[in-house]
Each structure stands twice: as C-alpha cells, then as structure tokens.
Length: 432
Ligand SMILES: [Zn+2]
Image (cartoon, rainbow, N blue to C red; front, top):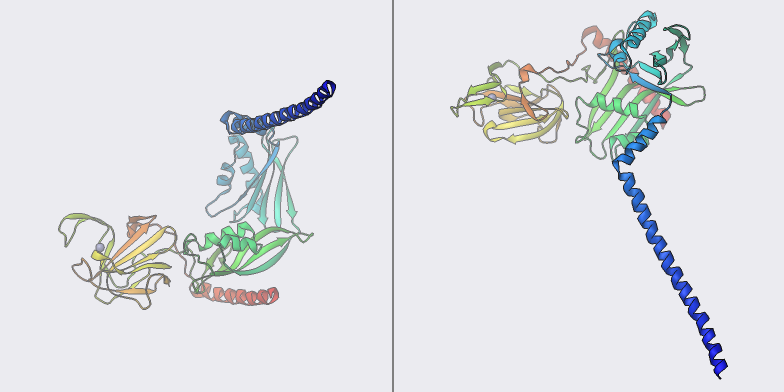
C-alpha cells in the first residue's frame, strides 16, 4: 500500500511539473509580448524624436544623387536672365550660361511654354553639366559642357515626336481635377485649363456636380507610341449650370497667342471702370462728408450720376450672388467674378431681366437700372469693387487688359474658330 501510495505521489509530481512548466511558459510568453510592445513604443517614440529625424535627414542627404535635373517652363514676363537667376549657381556660372544662350540664334526670342532642363553635377564647382532648351515641341538645343574649357558646345536636336490632337469630354462627378485625371488628361493640361478659366470661375465654389467640360489639346507621341509630352489647349468649354464658357486658342499676331470666347473677346477679363454709359462720376472713392448722414465717412465706392432708368452693366463675367434689398444701398446687385474680385451696384430702380441670385452674367450684360433707392439723394449708381474681401478704388485698379478682336483680326479669328469647330466635330465622331 505504502509503495503504491508513493508511486501515486510520484505520478502526481510529474503532473505538477507539467503544470509548473506550462505556467512558466505562459508567464514567459506574456513577458515577451509585453516586452515587444515596449520595444515598439520605444522605436515609435524615437522615430518621433526630432533628433532622430534630423539624423535620418542627414543620412538621406548624404545619399543624395550626384546628378539632378531641374526643369522650368517659361511664362509670360520671363527673360532668359530671370530664368537663369532662379538657379542656385554662382554669379560667374550664370554669366556663362547667359552668354551661351545669347550666342544661339534659334533662341533669340523667348516664347511662352518653352521648356528648359538643367542637369546639375553636385560634386563639381561649375554645377551645370548640360542643359536643354526647347525651341518648339519638335526641336531643341542641347548644350554640353566642354571637357577642356569653361564653355558649352551646342547641338540642335530634332525630336521625332508626332503631334496628335486629343478630344476629351466628361460630366464632373466629384471634382474637376479627379474627373479629368480619370479621363487620362495629364496634370499640366488640367493646371493650364484651370489657369485659363481662373479669370471667370471660382473653382472652389462654382463647379457643381453634373457640370461638364470638353477639351481639345495636343499630345506628343514618340516612336514607341508613348505620350511623351503635352502641348497646348486648342479649345475648351466649361458648362456650368447650363451656361457654356467656351475658349478658342488664336494666334492674333506672330508668336502672340491668346484665348478668346466665341465673340472674339480675350478670356483675360478686366473689370470695367465705368459699368454704365453716359454717366458722370459724381463722387469718388475716399473720405467724404456723407450727403444724408451728415458726418465724414469713408466712401467705399464710386458714384456715377445718371438719369433714372439708365442701364447698368455687369463690369465683368461672373455669378450674381445677390439681387435684392441691401438697406442703405437700396436695390443692389452683387457679382462674384472669380476667387479674387466681386463688384456691387447699389441704389437701382429695378433689376435687369432674369437677374437673380445664382445667375451667371457676361461682361456688359444689363443687370439693372439707375434709381435712387436706399440712402440716396438723387439718381446715381454706387459702384464698388471688392478685391480679396477688401473694398478698393475701382478707378485705380490695375487689371489685365482684355483684348477684343476687331476688323481684320476678328475676320481671321472667325476663320480659325470655324476650323476648330470642324476639328471638334471630327474628333467627336472619332471618339464615339
Ligand atoms: Zn456711393
């Protein structure tokens, strides 16, 4: 019995050992996983640590490549000098580049949208090893640093690209940018599109769901049928709440290209200084004694005296944000032209036909008629220009001048417009 008991005890002890070992195992694994959490929070906090980040930056900096490239596309107002001055180079090196460009006859005239590409060697004192200037989309000049002298050798290169005109159209479902990207339109074309429409459209607020656009632009295709570059926008139409805003590319003088609406008006819209015909400026912007209130007050607009019923025009394209009673301003209309400019027209006797909040108006369109409603001593138009939310003197505004094509230019434009319209229907047929 005794022996038997002992044996049973021994059996039990093995059982205890097994329990003990497994508890030990559980504790150890718990300890290990806790340790792991601690470790990962430690790693995370050291990643958040600014010194560590600095170190990472230094490491990656020292791993920066020896050669880098920088590209620039010329804009209106640029000169070769202003472009070269953007580069981080010594005065002497800039001078060498400038005289090299000046010596190249094919680069005499700097055009808009010319592409410049500079290749930098960060280990060399004279940083630029080569640079390329596009003369047009099919030709470029390559300048290579001479191995023996501090000068560049030039070489004209013909790019074997084919120009293709592309037509795209879509309904805007979420954002203009996303809808355009979904269509496969390259970002630089979208940016140019937004720039061209920026004179008349506030992209933050004016684009609604189910608005649409059409666009024709150039693409350049290499021998392998790959799109290597995009050219210019030839035509575009942005349909906002059932109003078409069209633009046509037109070369009105040699090398002078602009975009015009269907009536030959440049889309670079200016605001009219006097949005009324046959009126006399009766009170200008500035401090004055208020004719009704009696005390000196800032006059934040310009007054034009005119007989009751004289038509008042929208001073620029835009969207009516108010057409109603403005208290002291009487019957007034407020127009938003783009993200920067708004105009206000006060004391009207009545509003123009169909003028109400949300309506899109064209420059010169009648929006109301002179009256003397609100705080007014006699029939006049009180006109205000608001720039970035601040009232400014409309008579001293410097805005881009909107060219209007007339005479011979207009005739040529009409021909070019018809050609583009024909092209549009051709491309539309092909795309369907
Ligand atoms: Zn006034």
